[in-house]
Amino acid sequence: MASAVVTGGARGIGRELARALARRGYDVLVTDVDEAGARETAEAIGERARAMAQDVRDPDSHRAVASAAQERGPLAVWVNNAGILRTEKAWEHSDDDVRTLVEANLLGVIWGSRAAVEAMRPGGGHVINLASMSAFGPVPGLAVYGATKHAVLAFTESLQGDLDDAGVPIRMHAVCPDGVDTRMVRERAGDPDAAIIFSAGQKLLDPAEVADRTLGLLDSKTLMLAIPRTRVPLLRFSSRFPRAGLKLAALFKRVGERNRRKALEP
Image (cartoon, rainbow, N blue to C red):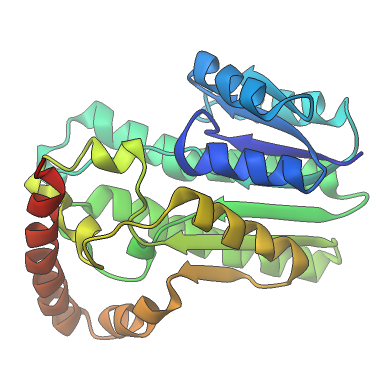
């Protein structure tokens, strides 16, 4: 039986990814800094899942997770899902918040990808990195968070180039969903700086749907998956023409603010 790792699996997209991987027949190791939450996920899945405490900011933790996963079978899938969200203006974050965002959202992905590549090099596999729709353009209110997701996308694409050059049969994938209906997002709904998260419409994406579409990557060589794809051309335009992109982002934020307020209504 092949094994899989899902970081940040205590709730939200991570929990749904772990469920979906188990349904595909993988032995899933669920990790999270919230060990109790990780165990709850594993117990809900059943015999195909185990749990392990992990702080993804620690590079050694990823090596330990890789080793533990391989006890049940060759490591075939690694999902770097763990991350945190802060919605404040860049100058309003504490120094500790900035450091935590970068270490969890970016360094955690880099450490995890390195550990996965080392474990998978003999037989190949898939590494899936959770980025965000915010990787494509300006996201006022999420500047630091957005910067980490820009970097995750760039790192994933560049790492695939390194693997191709070296002839290593590992497929990298970056997943860029729009706002997802998770506790992490709902916890920020009271903050006006979170408005742009709600700009796609009144309905946030369903975590289970995001998980199912994400694992569809295991049957493909797709490098980047945006959910939904319809938002990408406009956001790509924003990155090509930054000044126009900022005006577009301001419009998105106004739309998102209306939706954010509706989300708070009882």
